[in-house]
Image (tube, rainbow, N blue to C red):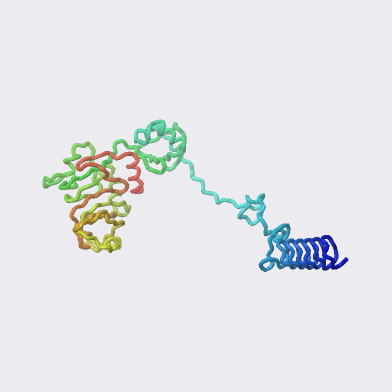
Length: 353
């Protein structure tokens, strides 16, 4: 009978749940607001123009219903098929995305039958024990002339071939010397002073090697000075083009104005050209004086003193505390220490060697 509110009736206009009429039944196919109707009602799963959750009609928020078995899922806008996950980013399932191929590095035989075993050279250079060096080789962490070496039987010529471990160059020439020296006040940075003043020769003149000093410190400046017989490295470390930083602690008259750091970083004009610091900070401040730290890659004569004097804060005392990765630390005045293999490697990296 039509018009009855039965649950399963087929009468049009019924408000039953399973009716097909225009009523508000849940399963009807009419125009009612049933949940599963196919008519124009506001059913949840209907396909009509109603506001159904899964229908294709004008459902919630302008007709976009909540998909169940139809709607967006049926039109391809539902959840991604997990079976096609490997084709993510491709336009077609049959055309998976391919990573760009890298050009192959040509293999070069670095083995020298007349050379020395690689692990022996690494151990002698202070990289580690023989066993440790063997493990580094088999792990693929050792590179000879740009080629990764993983075989323990490889021999090389230390005089003409270069070796890197974990990207850091290893100096294999046992005749090379690398020293850190804490230069005292009053000592001039030369190996032979015509005026008879105390010089570097009074501290390291008895060594058999011909040593170069990396840069200079004037007699009134103390602190770190690197000494080596590696001329190429010494040249690069002191050349401003390679940007190796030198760090200084300077005691100056206080108080320190707030804009001093900004002014030094922007640059100060000197008689031989402008100069700017790479970093600046106030370490300590007391009434009448302050301790500041400046770092710069310039190497001109008396450049720190002249720069601070130009901005109205003449230096009282000056100590160089660091050159590149090498720190002065607790090295006593007038003493030297040999640089470790890792420190030498970092110096080479700083100098782009």
